[in-house]
Picture (cartoon, rainbow, N blue to C red):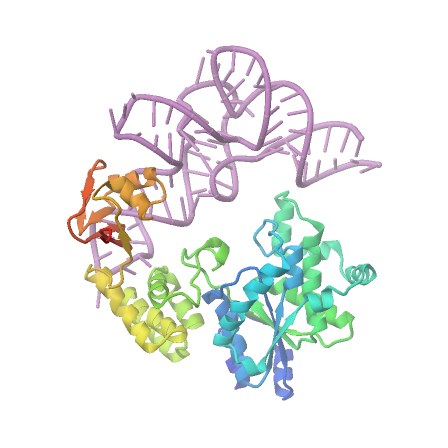
Length: 395
RNA sequence: GGGGAGAUACCCAAGUGGCCAAAGGGGGCAGACUGUAAAUCUGUUGACAAAUGUCUUCGAAGGUUCAAAUCCUUCUCUCCCCA
């Protein structure tokens, strides 16, 4: 049944029979996961993969995390269809510090090995690199999905970007990976790793691919650069709110990939939804609650839940409102919005008022010329989510 | 080295002298509706200005013109074909 645990919720395993064989062998398997040190926050999408890796650990296998410091420095193409900026050692080091602690929130430290790929990639001589390069062909490297897209769109592809796949595959050779785990978008690299391992006389790794989790927009995959992510270190309130905002169609997928609910439970929730249970309540009681529970505590999850109801269902004020201290007694509403950070520019502030999105103590401000005069603490609200408490300067 | 195509706002993409702060889509924001920050619909999306308006912006720098994203020159970058 170990196999069943591993297979659950995966998108694809190549090849499955090899996986079964490897697991049955009883050997402590080395499960490779490449991590990117350029973005220092772990979000729920990446957590999907980490959580699967944790399951391997529960079965006694070794997690081998490859920090792509070398590949980060040469610039990773990573599907962004644009060459990624190359970063420095110092930045990587800084990112890795809190990155590790985030990862260990999910993984078991005892069974986790961190390796920097500069350890071996940095030592390759030109000769080594040429030899490595001879193991692949241009056509093969261009086959990679995002490469071929860019190629057909007549976009530039730098030579080092092609080499990236090669290096990443070499990582598998260097750490003698038995299994590599990651998102489906990594398929090409994973399979390439198999090929390279064979060339180096190793048993090829099995690739375990997890589905990509769509982000808050429900369209693109969750990614820091799209700004559609939920970070695992975000506050319970933020996390809860963001989970409430995912499109209804994604509820089941999120339940499967981001919560600890078992399959039967999820199935019954799916049926409830078909029977017309309001998706909102599912998000509230199941999804948002369960996820916050994992990364915070039961108490925090409860609080976030009631906080959400307070603000959105009962339309009451949230409990913790940041305050802004006024420096003058009378202030033009537009200026107040900009000064307090609720609007980035005066034009934007103007638009918000024109559209009826600005409220003072719950009363919509309609006049652009409105002068706010301080009498007592007042709540300034923009849209549904942004609140600020206006206080007077202390004497 | 030769020939051709191209660079437009957060992203994609239309626009070949004035009606262009620049179509359309995506994304963002706001409103309506809703037991949701979902779905749907509507509005909005360079800055400044109470406002007719003003300023900055279509790869960069110059030029032509009353008027340039649009024409000319030079430059930078990218792609394709040939060698």
